Picture 1 (cartoon, rainbow, N blue to C red):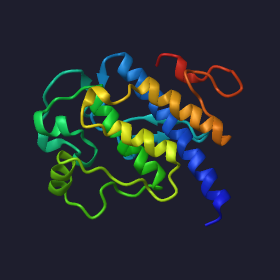
Picture 2 (cartoon, rainbow, N blue to C red):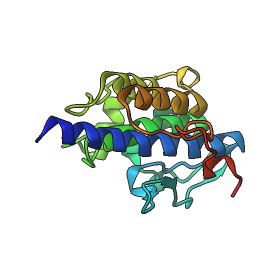
Picture 3 (tube, rainbow, N blue to C red):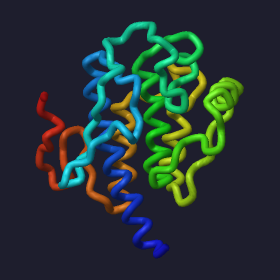
Picture 4 (cartoon, rainbow, N blue to C red):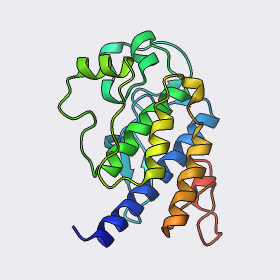
Length: 191
């Protein structure tokens, strides 16, 4: 594949990931949990604005959920093991979503069963970056997969870092409600 085309795809994916981080920042600020953050639950508009959707598992921050309904490959280890969900467990899922975006839609933890994923992650296994994934994006992914939830960054920091990475790559990005031209994006308005 032409490297210029692939770079443009990565920039577009990064822009969409940045939109998701901003949407999740909003939920985090309202103390709401998504609990099923994955690429399959992101809608992309005609003008390439990514929006978080499918709030079937969303709740105000609290403990507990029937573990048989959990999307294992996207769920943080503490949520799988103890049923403990926080915005930091959504951050874990965002790391998996980043992997999906930069792998161009591949399923995470390829060739691993749900049981194998759960056991491996508990023992410290983390996915390798997808081929062609920019180094700074892989660093962000890895920060989302910290074993200790308190060490995972808040969505505000993820949105800022993704925005900086996109600007340095020359892609348009919306960060903290400001488009690259300085105008206010719809994200800054409450739904």
